[in-house]
Length: 181
Image (cartoon, rainbow, N blue to C red):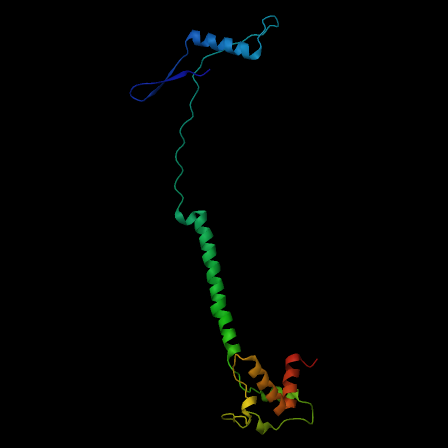
């Protein structure tokens, strides 16, 4: 059994050995608890000794703020947000901007010449940029000009007008898009 702790008036703790009467009380308490029988040859010994108290551990050093887990979690979220922002503004925005601009009538001489079957070659002088210099403006009806619009019905009307004006060229453009294999 450990020594008894007594507190002095100045706040210090002293270890004091138990008195023989206290040790005898503990022995009788143990005998009752275990069902002591002298006829069986049972013996009980209670010894008083001072237990060693553990040393107070030194406080752990403070972890720097940048090494704390919550900072890393926030940094991952911020980097993810910056990546999404870069993707949206640096990649997707220019793509959508180019898609929304009216390309006008873009005809590549080499692509058109190879796309039409033999005997149906278009007049090279009629294609934009064939003579060099500024390409001539195509003479189309107002409904056939391709222009950006948010109205689906007007876009559909413009496309129908373009196909009606030159169905062979429209068919060749679609063939080129789909592939000729």
